[in-house]
Length: 189
Image (cartoon, rainbow, N blue to C red):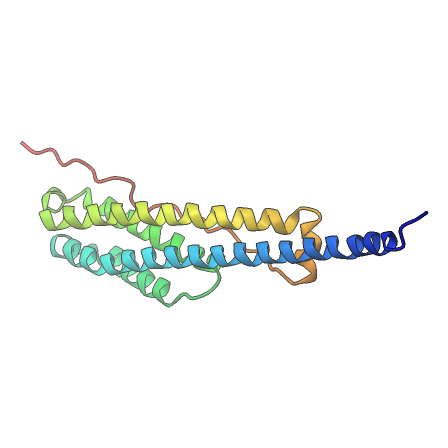
């Protein structure tokens, strides 16, 4: 004799298990997307810290190397452009890469001014910039790790079906090299 409720249990399992999977996958995608937004906030905070250091760095260099006006003006212009940039990370990366290149040129100019390289205020600013760059790179790695996990979930089957159905959009990696890697040792005497 067959159990009359067995077909209902089988039908319920056929309907409920996929529904449970869709809900769990949807919630995972939402959580990953929120991690990306949180990680971007960390990058944004560190970028603003870099922007706050730049005017002091430019002013210090200007005191020793006033005739390097073009380099100083370019750094100042790109800082303002980066501050105003509020687009997607890949759009902001374009501006950030230009700023990094300008900061690298500024720090290369410093090599021509031994007194500036020995200035304690400049050395402190350079240390702060190195520290900030380290923090930006750590935040970037965290952000990119979250983007990788999210992309994997959105692009692998069967979770890609859920991502596509509910409109989960791709996020891009944030690729910006550090403007300075370490404080050079100034040897005198």
